[in-house]
Length: 120
Image (cartoon, rainbow, N blue to C red):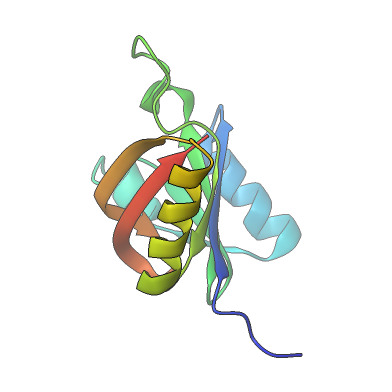
């Protein structure tokens, strides 16, 4: 089977206790915590668990966005795609009249930092 150019980068879960979630995923599934020290120090807004080289599970505390008037960046999954595939997706969204609801020029994921677009 040929390797796809599209990869699952991360899945975001809203959790009550990000550290407890990271411990559970580490102890039960063997997924190593990512940015736990930074989260504890207040330098990262959330902690993650590494599924494999390409993918993470992010544990977002509810306070990260629920204290705003409107939820921002709620539970989602993120795909890593090539610039050409991103352009194709944007054209398809426009054709289907699905608006891009957000853009982040520096978003953390399993592959490091990159550009993100959001749509519902």
